Structures are given as structure tokens and as C-alpha cells.
Length: 623
Ligand SMILES: [Ca+2]
Ligand SMILES: [Ca+2]
Ligand SMILES: [Ca+2]
Ligand SMILES: [Ca+2]
Image (cartoon, rainbow, N blue to C red; front, side):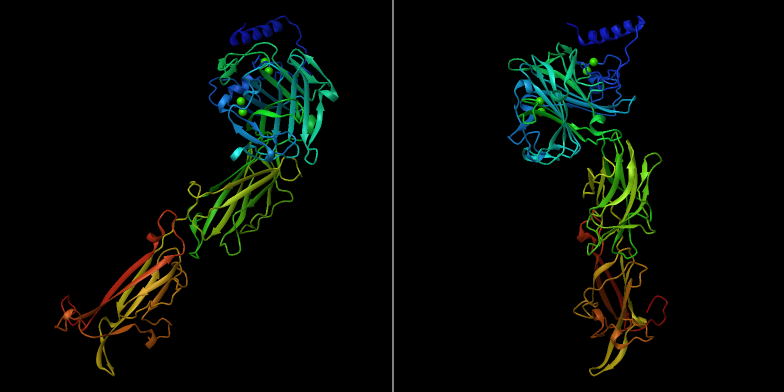
């Protein structure tokens, strides 16, 4: 038995010997079975020409092995085994059912021959004809008996949901490949299905039953010069590559780590997706599932599965606050709303272009919400995509957005590229917890099948609060700097008159103003509901006790006076006697700083002044 290292060495030596001998290496046909792209031959080891799973496993996090791969997208999943495994349960878990009828459970769910240890997929472009090939495979922890496999490529993002459910649904164009080992373990059956929805949701694209097939070594391919699909499983012991996550095999009761795949425990296959979808079409798969099953039939009972992201053509959307001094985020001149600029980045991390890219605001806008947003710019970096068609016209001030109404922001975004849209919002909430959705289509002109959302959530650190500076000032002044004597029906009385000036010296409107001066009035000196606009606005201050109507004279109803019943403090020397008066003012800011308790942001101010009984005579510092 060769060890893994010896096996690779042997292969490389064989290749070197072949080259040295001067024999022509036969030109590989342009097909999914082309070993110069990917080796489907029933092992996982890289032999030096095309990639193999050894290369893909090396790219998984923590592999500790440095080995390149030429894939344009890949996934390598380590599945649970034994009690930690998650597999199918329930009668609804069938290929012909949509995912809302599937169920999963965790525990020892599978017979050992169905126990998936790892599952993997990788996508390649054939440089000769630009065809998209997708390779897939799994290893299992037991052998014996037949063991059918299935591989789903989902366009939707599929993940495990709560209570045994699955998140995500089938989309037209999802692909299923099933295969079975027959006749003592040799692969003899391969079926390719496409999800088309409706009563009979699985349409057969090609199968060994209708097309026939042929076997070379451990590899079985559907018939044709460019086979639609191929599959292989190991007829002998094969090394587990060094880059692999630990492989466990169970014989009897316990799982043992092994350095070789026992025969028929390793499975791999490939499909020419361009033959399925047609030239120039890139199916935007997002998720990949490998599964074991009772047969290759679409009515088979499904056993174990391994599920992971496989972003062949994907989209992501993210939203970030743009912090620009005096621009964003700031309090608007109205003092009741904030202005925030957001950068919405829509990116395509996948392998094919995405089409008809749309942007939607999903936060509540307009009406009485106090929120409004406008698209003010779309930036498509050079080479990243093409502008919307028909062209997007953004008027000065921006293109107003309505909740849930899509705006096309780009016709295409190229693979591994992004575009930026600028959205500017005004809101009476600080911060504005804004939400956005991006939509695009895997096929130009088709309804959107990639839908991604991004919410700015409180406490996430993404919020974009404006810093509010509420400020209130109060001045109280004794009119004439002393009391005056007035003749009343009660005789001559000393009357002390004051002016009170209350000003908003901050950037935010102050509501529910209260001016309390118990000597003047038992109730607030201003009507309930009085507001002061931010500093600089027309209503940023109130004058009480003065010529508030600007008529040139202080009318009786403008005066703010009280009759002094006697000198304060029992002072008998009239020169020292004075009448003091205090005013307390409070107000509630229209906007609050998010991280400060609301009660700590209420505004309180107190002012006082004195009216002396006798005017200052010498005015040199002593009365
Ligand atoms: Ca291989
Ligand atoms: Ca190989
Ligand atoms: Ca599993
Ligand atoms: Ca498993």
C-alpha cells in the first residue's frame, strides 16, 4: 500500500517519465472530463496537471497546506459525524418538494454507509470554450451496499432554520445531480435535473438512462464528445490528502481517523453547466448541498446532507454612514431633524456578472414618519459594471425614494466588483435606523433572483447619530435698575418690574418651554406648547416684560411686575433694601443624543436680578 506522499510522488514521477520519453500526451478533449482542468478519476490527490480536491481542501481555513487552485468559486464543508451530525428527517424531505417541506434533525441520523464526512464543490471556466464546469464530491464514513448520492446547487441562499426548518426556497434553474453505485460499487447511473416549478418540478436534463454512458477506469461519463456530466468513486484505497480535514471511518462501533479512503468511500463528479443553461448564461448559484439517499430516483428517501455557501454568482449589500464635517451626520437648520449621508455598496463576490441591479429603501419614508431619503449619486468604478439602462437621471437635490420602490442603479456589476450608491436621508429620529435592499437577476431581463438586505440596527455600531448640542440661556433684568412708586387704590406702592429674555443658543429646537416665576404668576409665563427654534432661526428667543410686540412702548399687558409689600429681608435702611426675583426655565430638546438618558437632556436654567429700593447715588461701589 502506498502512503499519500508516496502516491503523489509516484504520479509525478510517472508524469515526468512520460514527458522525458518524448511520447506525445494526448490532447484532452474540451469537456468536463478534461483532467487538465480538474481530475475526475476517483481520488482526491493533485497529480500536477488539473486541480483535484487536495487543492480545494488546501484553501479551506486552517488547512495548514499551501497549494493553489484555479477555481473561480469553491466550498469545502466538514460535516458532523455520529451524534453531532445534522441530516434529513420527515417524509417531506424529498427532492420533488420545496424546501419549506424539508426538515432536519441532529443526532445519529444516518446508517454508516450514508454518513457524509466532507462535501465539496468547485467551479472552473474551460479556457478553450468558456464553458462553466462545476465539480462536486463527498467522502463518507462507511461503505458496503449501494449508496446513492445527490448534489443540489441552489440559486437561493439556503441555510438551516429554527425548529428543523430550512431557510430559502427553490428557484427555477436550481440543479440536482444524482448518482448511484451499481454492480458491486461501480458508478453506472448519473442523472441531471433542473428545477422548473409547477406540478412536476424536476425536469430531466440528461441521464444515463436516456443518453447511455461509458466507463474509463473509475470514471463514468454520460455519452457524448462533450459529456454533460461525469462521476467517479474509488475502486481501491486512495490517500486522504494532507490538506484534508480529519477523515473518520467507522467499522464496528467507533469512528477511527484514517489516512486512506477505503474503497467506494470517496465520490466525485462534474457537470458542464453551459450545456444545461446555454452559452453566455451564468447560473447564479448561492448554496450547495451534498446528500446521501436511498437511490438516485427523485422519490428517494434523503439521509445525510452537508450544506454550505457556494457563491458562484452572489450579491452583497452593505450600508455605511459617511461622516463628513458640516454635511453628515448633522442637525438640519430646522433644529428638528438630522441629515445623514449613507454609502450603499452593492458588490458581486461571485463568478459571473449580475444584471438589472436595483436599490430600494425599506425604511418607512414619507407621510407622517418624518423620514425622507434621496439617491444623490451612483458611482461605478471603471471596469466594475455598466450604468443603468435607460440612464438614471438624478436631479439636483437627489432622486426622492419611496418605501419599497426599486430604482435601477446599474445594468450589470461584473464579477468580483462593486458599485456605490449615495443615499441622503432626513429624519426626526437620531440616529436614523435605515434599511436597504438590493435586487438583481442572474439572467439579464429576468425577474430578480438575488435579493439581499441590510438593516442598520441599534447597538450594531453602524448607526450614524448626529451630536446634538441643546442649549438654553435666560437673562433677567430689573427694569430701570430700581423700583418705582405707583399710585394705586391701595395707596402708593413700590413696584418692581423685570424683563426676562429666554434664548435658544443651541442647534436643536426646544419644545414644551416652561417659565416659572411664582411672584409673577402661579402658572408658566408662556402658553403651553411654546417652542424655541434653533439659534439663528426667527423664533429662537422670547422677551417677557419688554416691548415684545415692537410697538415702541411697553404696554401694560407686556409689563412683568409685582408690587413690593415690604423691603426684602427686613432691611430697614432703604438704601440697602432691594427686591430680588428668580425665574426657572425648562424645555425639552426636539432631538436627543442617543447615548444619554433622555431625562439628563432636559434643559434647565435659572436667572435672577435685584431691584434696589433706592437707585445708586454715588455709584462708586458703595450705596
Ligand atoms: Ca479527483
Ligand atoms: Ca487526482
Ligand atoms: Ca450532515
Ligand atoms: Ca455526516
